Image (cartoon, rainbow, N blue to C red; front, side, top):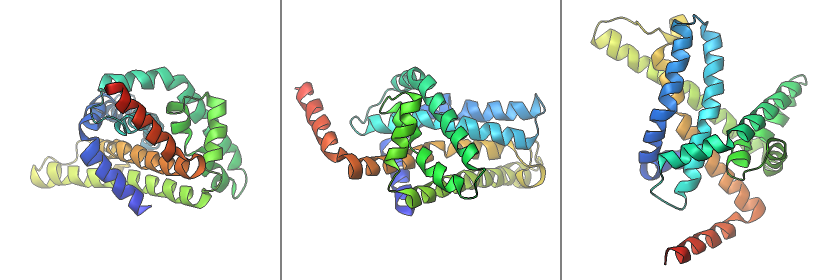
Length: 246
């Protein structure tokens, strides 16, 4: 799992830096600010805000899943094109997310249920957004892709969740250093360890969404290569693109 995360970091920094940064301005930043507004304007408790943040982060990752797939064939990816494609696939994507979460909720009634259900829902992003399947079919496809990788996928999900927590804690402490220690302004936007959340923690939580989406996408590629011989499909797709450019 560490190798996948390292590769995702390199991908984000070297391959997708430009489009990821532009997408973040339209997705990551507004989502974090929306969650903070729910706290300060609507007076939601931090537990509710974090549930909202987790749900929005899961949805936002879809944009970076599409961007990562396009970057496999073209280093110049249009932000508008990614967002347009994401919006076209949004109904099926949301349907797939809802179905897999319901399955996980029902499986949680059993002691080992989540260990069975969570890996089977990991690739629902890719099944709906990249393979363009309907919600119900995508759930079955995601389960099929994970059928022989339960333990690696549980590890992947654990790493993804840990990365989210690390992003929130790291950004909160950075904000504390800048606002409180350096500028002597205190903690006007909240304190994660004392209050349960802060604007900095939300920004850090959402900032790792591109990394998480990329790591899952790279694992999806590996799964498809092993299961479907996708490396051959990719070679043919690249060959067709080169022929069409002539």
